[in-house]
Image 1 (tube, rainbow over the protein chains, first blue to last red):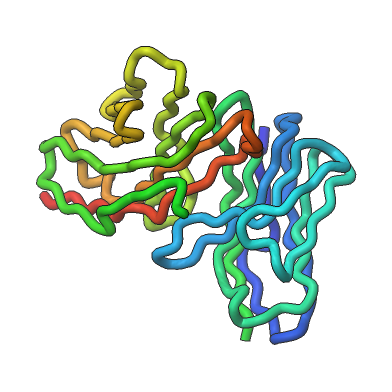
Image 2: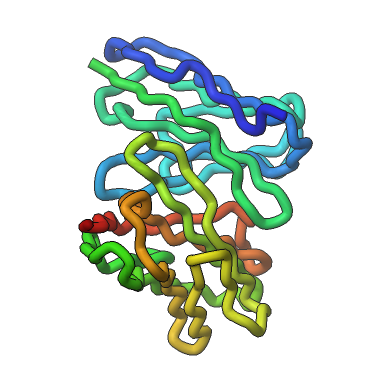
Length: 110
Length: 117
């Protein structure tokens, strides 16, 4: 049972490049979400999904896209990377009450 | 407006002593849940404890307890008998249910706890 997995663990991008952060869970959870963590800001919600085919915006959605074609996968796309998107990104899935987090992706945009 | 407020950016405690980390929340939803997570320097998010808004008793998990004061909208984490391994960032979070809530938790900014030997 792998829980929530994220790839890659580390990534460096140049301004303007695009990329996809992968997230998968094997717990058959309906709710999944993406957060970004910046120093002194806690975790801020980017996008979330309440089931396959259903997504919605969180607190800081600009510059990011998501889709949910299966229950297991919830990728986060950066459309045109900017230095302000330098952050640690966490994917999470929700059980009956607890959130299960992936190990995080540390992204640097130069 | 902040839904979760953690007013202590940093806290220090002596090993074996108890420490309270403060958390206040703001919601008009009668159904909500409160969480505490620990983030050690290695970066992973570790679930510690959960309190539902309708739970009559304060939640406890080993050395962790949640001091839930509904009227004051307060959900403080109490760590008893601190250990060196408790040094970490601690995040309070809230999940709202009905009334437009997404059932996805929102987080406070965190409190850094350092345990001294």
